Image (cartoon, rainbow, N blue to C red; front, side):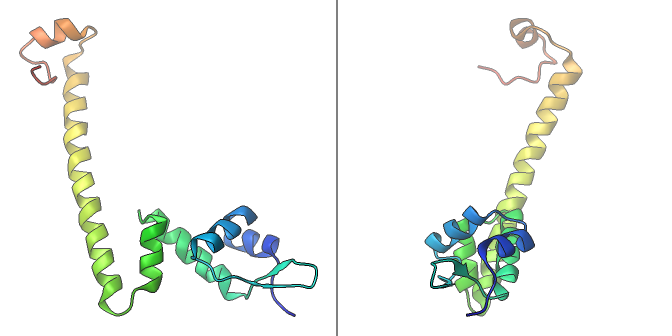
Length: 127
């Protein structure tokens, strides 16, 4: 039997061996062959697959979404990426509004919420 052992794959992909087993349980990685002693032997392509999974996570995809991406055919991947982009752009808009409110709070230089709330420059919403 040939293949790479868990530690080799994990080190090459920048993950820990427990991640490999977790991804196997989640169905992201196919079950590897095993030696007579029970050690997992992964094909070399597993490293590329792991890197793709981690890159997808960095782009904001959940593991369920990564599974769907890996199973997507044709326009399915494009549609999922477009939906994620819309989700990210909405979050950016929300975070921009939060940042503006925080800038206002910092500019108001309030140390006391009750005093600040009485000031017309207070960025806190009316309660």
